[in-house]
Length: 330
Image (tube, rainbow, N blue to C red; front, side, top):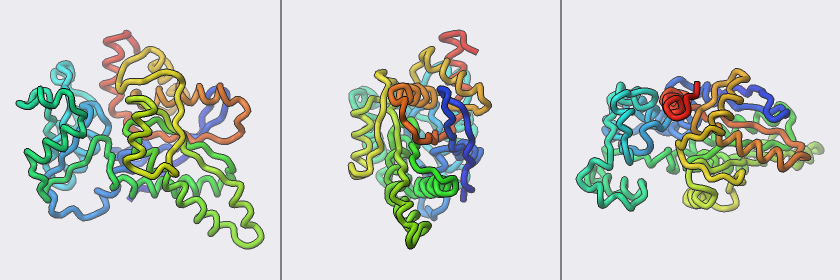
C-alpha cells in the first residue's frame, strides 16, 4: 500500500547520519502511524461501524485515526485525559484536523466518573469505558493509545524489510536504527522483525562460498523514552514481545515528560531542522538529544546511524504556538 520511504543524509554532531523519511509515506498516514495502522487500511473490517481510541489531544495518532474512520465510514470517538482550554478556543494542528473529519474528542475529566478515573492509567480507564459504554460489541474497534497492539506488527514488518534491503544494497555492515519512543510499539516490533528477517534475507542473498558475508552484518534498534523513563519503556516492551527481541534503551541522564516544553528541546529542534528536513517537535528533539549523548560517550563507534523519521509534523503548529506563549520562541 505504501511505497518504500526514501533515505536522506544529514550532518549531526560532525557525523554523517542517514534519515529514513517515513514522514513522506502519505499525507494522512505518515511515519509510524502509516506503519502501525497499515493492517487496518489493508484488511476487511466489515462488521465495524465505530472506532474508539485514546491519547493526547495533540497526538499524531488522533489525526490519522480520524482519517481512517472517515475513509471507512466509521464514527470515531477519541478520549483524552484532559483538554486544554486554549486548544478548545483556538483549534489547530491534529486536534482541529480531527474535528474537521468528524471525530468526537471526549474529555475524560468531564465525565460523570472522572473522580473514579483519576488514579487510574489511561489504558485501564479505556478498558472500563469500552466495556461499560460500548459493551465490547463486535461493531466497535478499540485501538489502544499510540496503536499499541498486535496489529501494529504487520506494518512494521514492511519497514524492517525496507531497512534490510537498504543495508544490503548499500553494503552496510553495522547499522544502528535510532528512534525515540512513546509507547514503544514501533521500536519493539521493528526490533523483533529485524532480528527475524535479517538472517533469512542474508541467507537468500549470500549463498555458497560467500555465505560468510552474512555473519558480518548487524542491525540493532536503539531507542529512548519520551514519556515515563526507561523502566516504563521496558515494561511496554514486555507486554508486546519476548525479551530476546528488546531494543536497546538509551538515555542522556534526563527524564522527559511527554509534551513538556523545554528550551533545550526547542533549540535542538531548530538545529536539526536547519538542514532542510522538518522534524517533529515532541519526540524528535528528545531523540536527537539522546543520540548526541550516545555519540559523545562512544567516540570510537564506527557504525552507521539510520534515524527513523516517524512523521507527525502536523502537530508542530500547536506545539510552536505553545513554545511562543511560554518562551517567545519563533
